[in-house]
Image (cartoon, rainbow, N blue to C red; front, side, top):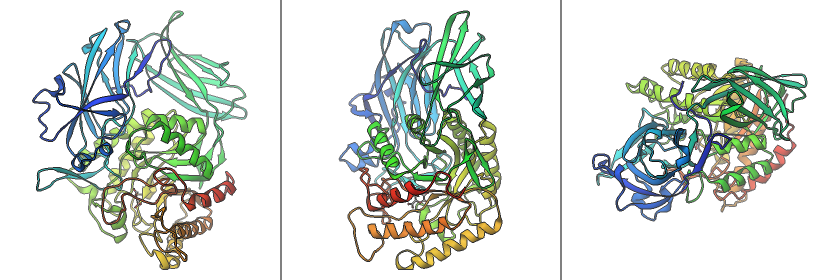
Length: 605
Ligand code: GCB
């Protein structure tokens, strides 16, 4: 079990949260001298920067944007007198990619992995009724032992530079909300639910972990606030008569209130809004509440102007509105677990989410998307460093599942994106990764990973691990693009015929297909990069998808244009968006709207 509770911080009768978002001090530490020189005792000559946000795109100085190494954040936090006798935490939605937290100069905790929460228990070092200095030493260097994978190089001028093995900008910093949290000494540490539907009723099995011995009760309230089920004990079953299940694009959320009681006194109360639904893969179908669903949607990024990967509540709202407008019902959190508020919104909107851990770049290449289709091999899972990578990967899976398990929206786990599977060395690695997810998820949601272009029926040694086979395919873009598109279609069909031959009896899903498109370019007849070519390419892909009954979903790459490292293959970022980075539609968005609005939920049932 994890050392820290992953439950989302909420107010209740017994709990308090205070947002620490706002302007924090920031200072770069290129020589990694801060710790030695005790910068944790107070940053001098620091700048101010918004939290949550990536630091990169605020500045006009390229050395700052590209900064790689250690950097410090600091703020002063007032802890009220009334909280004495309780536990006090500072909770960071993330600190990318790793961080050490200090309070009043004392080191409290550290965390590896930039896309899952960091909880610092500051109880022992808090000065109540006073301001407390919270300092965070963050580091954003990429390595092959941590996810996402990449390298850090030192330029001749001594400056460090990030070399990602993945196709998104290495944004970093305190990119998600930060909260000061108070919970009682004896508190609800973890809470897990699993659902079954019987006719018009539901049975919800639950388990509660607390930090003490007092009895526990769980109540379920409907959206009108009426109690519909009650059970006591750390484990039990809640029966909800005439349940209203959470449905695709038609959500219904019950409030689960978990209480620790001492007679009639409430020691702790934790509440969560939870949708009741089931998820299964049966033969080649994905079933939600025992009914087939065809996935329509996007691979996304947390990415926008100025704040970079920083959680942006306005952008989140706009993204959901745009997705609904296209008729989408799903997205993948490519290529890392997103900020928790996004899953809460997906729960509320009835969106289906494939939750992806940050295991991307597991192919040694700075242009993985290009090189994977050349047959290049990099022996990625045979390195001396592989055991260390595996350890970090498994820990991230545990944190992701623990954090996200109760979300109705999460219908599958994506455990890797485009790893090198053409080598048998990947097999034992995959075994451990897939077993871990199965062991941890009481709902036993389907597990998948996104297969790169050269992970083919005849070359991939790992597809058997996936409950849903997810393909990232670029026929007509990275291969046989432009006027060769007819050959691309043929090659695409040949591959799909080979998969069909295998008779896997599992659903297939396209987790990526797309063509870079400049929102400025129009050309008749089409050329690559024009809006006309994007449409031509998409129509070709859809003809292929529509020809195979086992293809049970399409998530186009990408929802919106996004920032990447600069290079000859990218025009200030990846332009495969169906929307621009400012979330305005390219022509293809209208085409998707027409297609997706007309495909029934159970298309190809
Ligand atoms: C991929 C990667 C994704 C890239 C995309 C592309 O296969 O999974 O991260 O952005 O291709 O556009 O090349």
